[in-house]
Length: 351
Image (tube, rainbow, N blue to C red; front, top):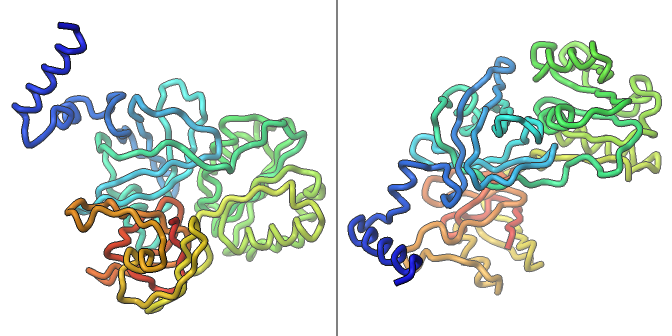
């Protein structure tokens, strides 16, 4: 008998012994970060950055394929017995020697995951991971001059870039309410002291909001610079209009953490973006049924007793959980169960 056949027989014997669990379930307990397991990570440290932000140090499992500076990662965190998925920018350089990665999280009002990570996460906690993704990355052709335009937690993907790639001429304009609210402030000022960055801080509580039309006063040659901008929708909308108005829109690269303000209602137009169909949905019919009636291929295992087979990305808008009434708004990485979710205003489902 070949060694492969012996291994197969041994595995089947183990399955008989461990039923109803699988041998892999026990391996997960012993070696949860092994290469063949579902991709996980272990939180190894939590470092406060400001009063409401912290950097989470994660040791990824062996299946982790690395990242490109500026990308984000979706993580699954168990909060009060419920697994919730969110996306966060990776703030560590790509060549970190110990193989760890970091995300830097700002707690937002009523944010279940962000508040849990900033205030309650403990070293040793296992989390689920997806592979890194995102196209908010530095261009392969090295620009002579760069501008980073950021606000609030929009500094996080850019910090990954700063830690990863050094430019001869780099300028940053960053907005935050007060000096103590600037995430990574000490490290940014170290870069300034070492002449690796020119930094302008706009403290909105005292200086007011940044008027993008007066950017030339802060960065006279802004139009000549390859620019990466990340922050609230208002800042990015103004930047896109400004760059387009000056005919240099190809030099602006933006990353939006959240869509515009969502006003939840009792029904709305549902767009199935992959299928190219838009239909009206009431606020009581599951989106799974709405999609099927519209002829959209809606995967699910619900009717066969297989939960979470209908999980789908919510690209835009808001939905209501028919069991609890809870409203879920779209943001990068948010998944919904279409069998128990109804439209709460216009929304876009990735089907």
